[in-house]
Image 1 (cartoon, rainbow, N blue to C red):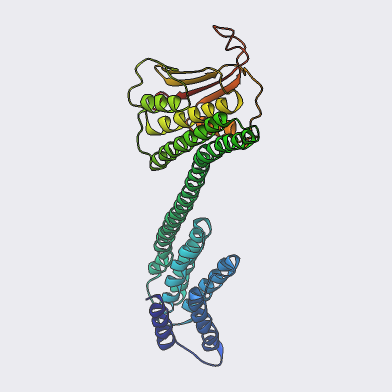
Image 2 (image 1 turned 135 degrees about the vertical axis):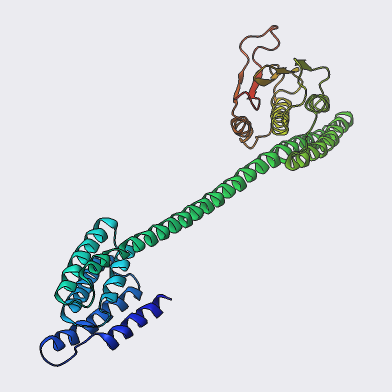
Length: 368
């Protein structure tokens, strides 16, 4: 559409602006008319040098005003209208408006010199700048909206990537909890059974073999828990803790304070993983020591504490992955809570002093 307008103005100017000749005013018009056509056509070129827009438009407008003043007939004023309007599109208001005012005053003077139209019409030559500025404003608003949409899309992609990485870290922790500890325990029992074969103590070999089978069954149960956790199915916290503690060889070791009720699935999953990690570590590093687990529901949070007594006999536990305590701290941190782990220095009975305590404090949703 704009190309057709440019072609139409140029054709109308070439057909109507007079006189055109080789001398005097005709020569001036013969030079100015093509210059105005070129200035008008230049607005369709891509913007390569924005700093050249002002001198180009100022030159084109000056040439069109001079063409009005020199000719005694024709549509030279159309060049001014279109160039002033494009100045509003291409230039900032602080540069376009003064240029339009100058075009209007110069146009009035030009019509006074060459009365093709009444001189007040010349004052209207600056008005198209308002249309150009409005169009520029719409373009800038469209570009801003597009930039905002692109920024939102980039933010959404970044958020999605962060969610993927967080989910990978969660799966890695769950895989570690199930495989690393379970396989380490099974390996210990099998190594013990292999060592006992040389002594001929078949009863203890059977005990180690039975313990290995028990660990396999426990591993399968823990794998089921992991699948539930990955699917974010809700697990009953107290029942799951009780089953987990009993499967580790301890009975009546869980004490619940307060009404636990229904907790968020993410809280339940991570508390179970912390309990699993702590019980496995207790079995590896302090076998035979008593274990006590406390679950306390408070107004703003829930507290899980796992205690194991001191080592009662020399233990040659296989080395762990070193990621257990780190994984527990990560789990609690993701929930906005804190985790403390360390030796027990004060307890109600001497059997617990020198043991190990893990305490996880997790704030409940809505209380943070």
